[in-house]
Image (cartoon, rainbow, N blue to C red; front, side, top):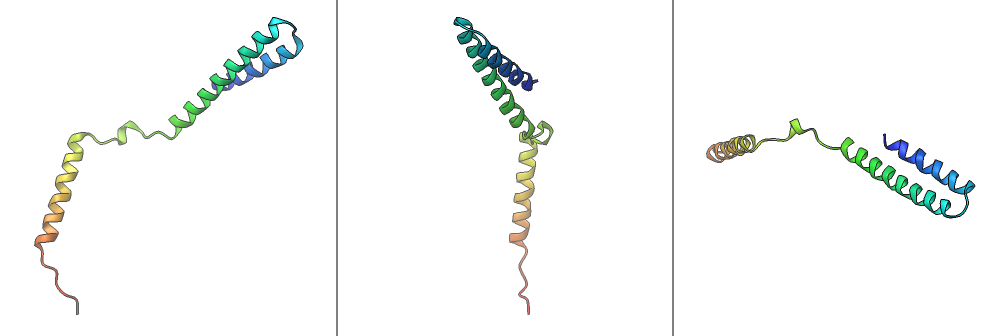
Length: 86
């Protein structure tokens, strides 16, 4: 969808080249607005493409469960005496 803004911007520049008077200023202003809209759409598409899936985000309960598991593993490894290797 954002590519349409680029096409509109280019069409307005071509129209401004062929026009005269105040119409040139209006067409160039419209072209600038369409170009900015195209850039914002392109940036938005790039950001959303690299965004993480919401299903991969952990809930606070899952984070707490993982912390408890890590603490249990740490306590179990600290309680178990290490045997020296020969």
